[in-house]
Image (cartoon, rainbow, N blue to C red; front, side, top):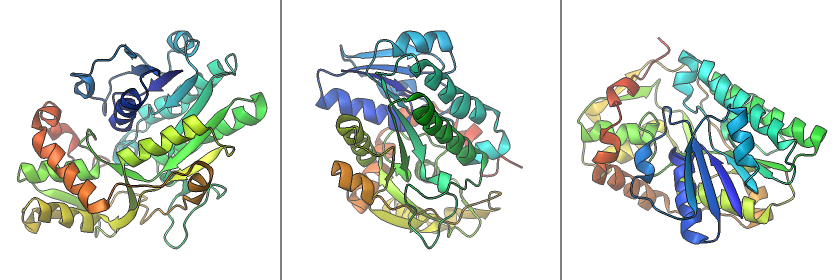
Length: 328
């Protein structure tokens, strides 16, 4: 079996590759990544496997993607611009990667219909949900340019399944955390700022609420979907804890024995969703997936990973990505 993993040098993609190579010695993986913001070559600096091949390239490159897709049985698309704040500041790269890149893959798959395609999406496509756990059939109502591009890519996938008979699935996952996450995201930004004894910006009142999942659990869910290939087109994926932004910041500071006066409140992002909630019963029913990573222990282990791996994040130009309000 052969996988083409796009965006495999990023956070979720790299954790997925590590998991599959370790568990399945007969599966071969080609990782294509353009190595833009969010990708880190150090994710595979000490990684060696005869079943792993890295290709530096863009999913919008039609010639290259045709060549690679002809070699594989599955395409798992992690490649995406994914930071809401940056999408508000400049959405051009989001449109290119998240929509045009997916369209390029789908067009190639029209000529390679035996290849199965998994589009990694997000719970943010539902828009704000405070009182209801969204299910897969609910209407999409994205609130920012990032989630709008992810919703658009989903619509493309769904249309190609219906019109051309492509064999595809879509996953919508809640907020991830864990090792090798790019420091523009909330949890690693908190940890690194605390290590450096720098101010930790909090949008608005900090009471926006999110469901969280450890990246290992997310990769487990993706693995189950790929290997079982269940009947439904779309699957929500969720972890086992929900909390406000300010609460998770305080938990991290407490674990690191850092003072809460590092917290500084900044203006809320435009169009901020106060919360996302999804119902993940369908994936449990169809694949048996359920998250197993204990929330407190896995958060503590994530903190420890960043403390112990300063060489990993030390090469990242942290000064360029820590601006809490890049849209201003």
